[in-house]
Image 1 (cartoon, rainbow, N blue to C red):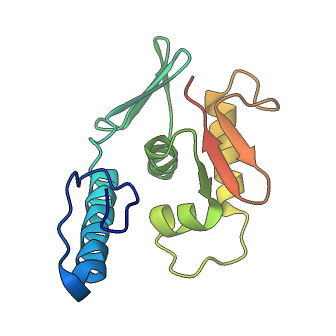
Image 2: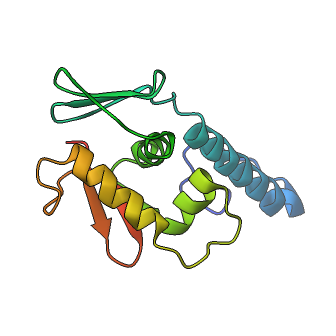
Length: 146
């Protein structure tokens, strides 16, 4: 319970601190928000990604479809790694341009779309009907791993 009677998960009993109640409460919430942000950023690194029969090894920069080795460029590995870190969530074109190409301002370009097109042809069973690298119209792309 918070001092105002509402629920707060880490406080069972609350003493009144006078005029500093709000300040202490806000500092605690800010600390909690910062801890959550750090935990989000410190996920274990993704070393390997499996998409159906395709295995992508990010440490060795190798990809295999069954026993057949796939030829992926360094940029394609970087794009896949960015998508894998946020699997199931939309990764915007701007975010990919920033993280993979290092652009601070996202220019109007079809670069990301062209790389995704090539990745689909290398990884998808039917590139015209992708099941792994899905487009989020107007936003970016989403990697579906299951």
